Image (cartoon, rainbow over all chains, first blue to last red; front, top):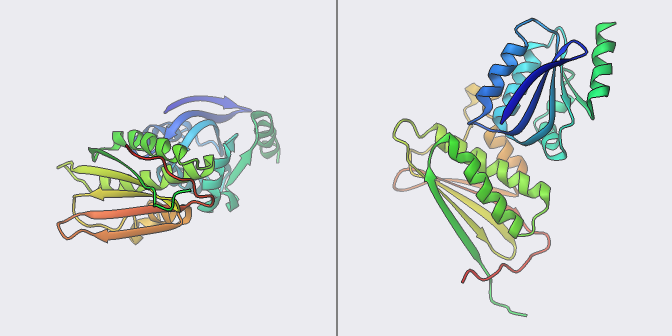
Length: 117
Length: 144
């Protein structure tokens, strides 16, 4: 698994590729903490290159949603059908604190809309 | 048209270490793809087996035990058996940890599989079997 951190419309963006499992999740967890160290209300994850996700990654997403609960949201971009289905099964997708986007432009627009609210 | 039950069995052994989970998933993928399972079912099996193994790894402690994963492909189902020779434990069912969403392993296995069995081994250890039923049974190839 690899994580690259940048930003999109001013929100931190984690570009994650490969497999997130119990062996690799710590790296993502550290990157997530670092990305949120600036107290941003939104964090984006480009998930289009994530090929595998299990309870370790799901737990991290739940924790991040909880962390941003009263100030913003977590945006997941371009997750494949299997990854999306897994997030649905555990109830992540019905949580207001998590938003799914098909691509970066849509996510960028949502960040702008939230910032101007 | 043969009436004899055709069975394909494959097995892998590994150390109960986190880094082996990816290797185990390659094995699951190989078996599931050769059983002609749909991409989404292959993914389900990878998650379920990996979760069961991750749990065994978590309970393995410092004396890393052996982890044995056996695939059994009969005409009606594909089953993965995970044998862990450590102490008996129910996979990721620690209710106290649910609050932190850490106990998601077992619920995921149950949600993704058609059948889940967990048993305590007489000689210390845990056996988890995870099965998917095959809608369109494909005669498994002879093992040779």
